[in-house]
Length: 193
Image (cartoon, rainbow, N blue to C red; front, side, top):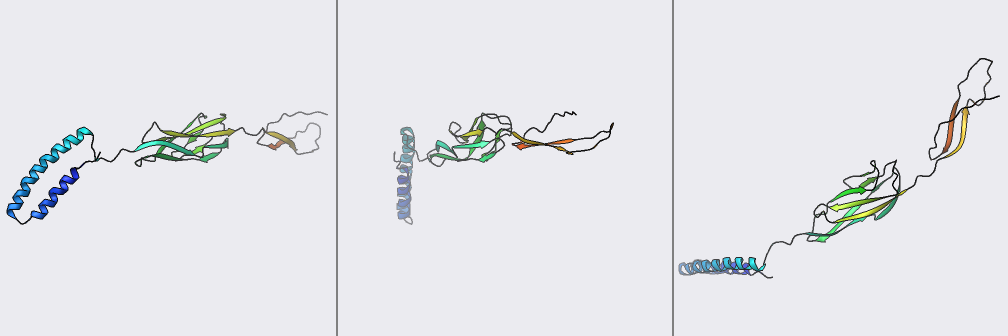
């Protein structure tokens, strides 16, 4: 709806400028100004009832998009996420980050950096960005947690490799376990003839 209040004020101002310097006309302007002031007051009341408003429209959030939308990470890895807040009338673009479905060591910072715990057992996580302006609006990203590769043992080395001892003597030995993906390094010792 259009509000003509600005036009009324403009007319009063223009009339005052045109009649300035003429006492009789200035008096007429003052009387007319009072009349139009009453009209303006009535118009304000009337238009407020009928919904006329010159206020700036309130911002609204229509959606939140998280990028990347999906990613695969291994335990112990990190990933940066970003969020875009969509809406009308320029809503604030700040968000609150949370991560769902992970172990206690998995976390996400206030800037959207996800850190997957080294002991994470969940197969998937959900990263959520929630609008701080409208907390009912949020966007999500899916994180697939890759299962860690199995550890394998490729060899065991004993040191020293050979030694000569007399009856009644002793010797300390050490063992080094070689392998991939950090296998357990404990060994069982046995001896024989």
